[in-house]
Length: 324
Image 1 (tube, rainbow, N blue to C red):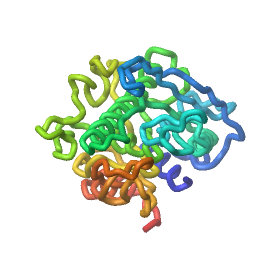
Image 2: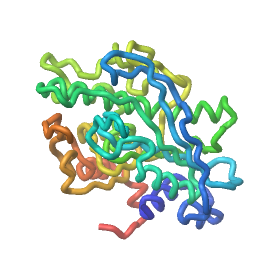
Image 3: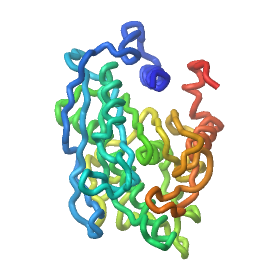
Image 4: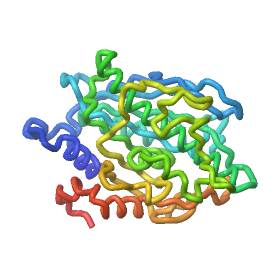
């Protein structure tokens, strides 16, 4: 965590005077945090019940208590959960995690806020069919779930940019300093936010059906940023871009290492090499509840190496961090 925080602040504030920030962002200089829960950032179209219907998307905002600084770097955090819901009464994802209130998400957001950031844990649209006996169905519905999650993350970026311009900057953020991070399933989202920038990247054979049509259909689901109004998407804050400064992930994977191209934001990744559900380098995504194969992807090791090869990691390398 400390290493990630050092990297975040150095990259975010490159080119600014750091003398006055020697402790802020690096140490817990605030003793408490103000949490604003259940803030609606958008309404979109969900498919969790099997038929399209309105889905209210919410976030929990963590801010340092008593902070007098008007604009703070913003960190957006996507929780895990296999794109399936989890609740005490319906743990459909078969896990003890999968919501904004996961203890790990609360702790990470709290630690960032105590260091002076504004940290946000957000929910995104869920729903796919992991129980299908057909790999084509599993792959197609999972890819569409990830596609919606990416759209929602980018919509949230635009929410804050719109709020900054038109809403009085309610949460006191600097919209030129935005990071997206994710844990587990959220790691898929954060990695794709920085790398899935061209719809042609979804024409790889593994992301298409038997006749070469991408599983993610823009005529139904809209564009990569989620700006288009389509049967399965509502465009929100369309006058703003979805650009971020960097991404980080705890687990997860990128759909394919070829998604990563020169000029995209730097990434920081943490991944257990023995992860049973997402590959550390290149390999299969496995359904946690059934053990079934879904699709081959590139894990954190492969993703970061490709980003490094293309020069995207140069700002991190320039820090001279001593870590093999």
